Length: 169
Image 1 (cartoon, rainbow, N blue to C red):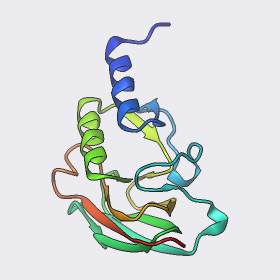
Image 2 (image 1 turned 135 degrees about the horizontal axis):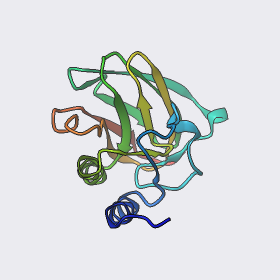
Image 3 (image 1 turned 45 degrees about the vertical axis):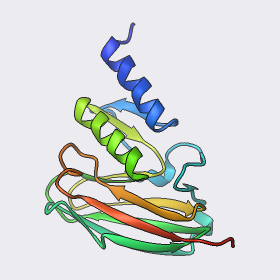
């Protein structure tokens, strides 16, 4: 069976944005938690965390007002946290960690190829009324972001900020 040129082009574009993105068609099962997807790969904004080394849990709510609450979090350099994301709305939402540039590119890809889903340790897809987790080790100091990349949600302001305090641990 051959792959359509549209699907091949999208796969290459996503691979260039997020090198380890695993894709599946919209009706394929998607993990409820980004913490279990894929192998740990160093990203500009950190690396998948070891669930046995979590130092704390940060609760974040998503809503149909296209907002995260809190919209800004602060972590220590080297800290492994569980981001527990609860969808308080009636629509599907997700939380994707990344740099602003990566998130914008990924959002554009999601607008162009709406039927595609992905499973990565820095992404939690959360159905209405459900909760998902991302376990992440913030081993890069700086300012990063999280956003909902469901088409239209980032543009509506569904974005947050992660400040990773500098210094070695």
